[in-house]
Length: 387
Image (cartoon, rainbow, N blue to C red; front, top):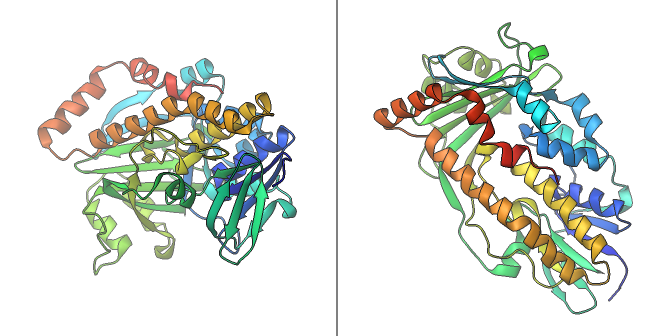
């Protein structure tokens, strides 16, 4: 097998693309193997907190992302009637962290990263079947009968990662207890102008709703609704049932849903996995959701995958004569932080989805009683981090 600095990256999502860009900066040859036959932009809005924006700057795409997305200039939490519970000091955070947080359409972010990848570096329609390794490198075999080899293999193939399964065996995903209904609409509300980065979350009883600008006059919204795992849409249809569940809620909750095309409203049960004790085996490792899938409650899914990419590339640069050691060092540098955020995201979700009226009353009392700057400081270790 080849001893060249060439990396096989399985999966061309955000973590895979970020890993490719980071490794290219360190002089590595990269090839992304994506099982889809075309690279289509999918998904809804995505949060890029200050820590993620700093990584994107280091990857050379930060300014492009800023031009496509919308800066978070306000962050308010309300109850379902619209009463303000807390307003985070966003300007103070920006000053402290040295960067704004942004919201962007996932497809726009993917295309920005993909534009830095040549056609020779992306292989579509490549479903990984197996891989093997020795002291010289890694051999990957695909469903179409083809095979290839490289110095290392990076599993960036998401929460259903085939690479993770091959390394560490079959395991069950953990259902969060809620399903997410999401959409993007062209919508305007004078109380939430784009110029002020207007947005909010509203917390109810077993339901949470978010409303955020993502650039280009678009609003990303989501409703996280407690529901049995695998529950299907009812006879009224996804849109009507969501509106019914949010009857009487603070506007513009229902108005922005009404402004969304029925076919553009997505629904997904939300899962994570129990944190792994290790991510690497020899010359094979995991990044992003393949390594540490997390619930979206802290807005760190994409950011943690990007942090992985940069740390991995730096370790491979530092220990360029021993890739297996580089992967172990990467894992040691990243695992504790990423796994802590997995746990924190699950805890945050549990609190925001409470159904007990007494617990909800206590939650809202605490939010209103504790100064906003203290709420903000609790996020410093996450959002204020710089790789």
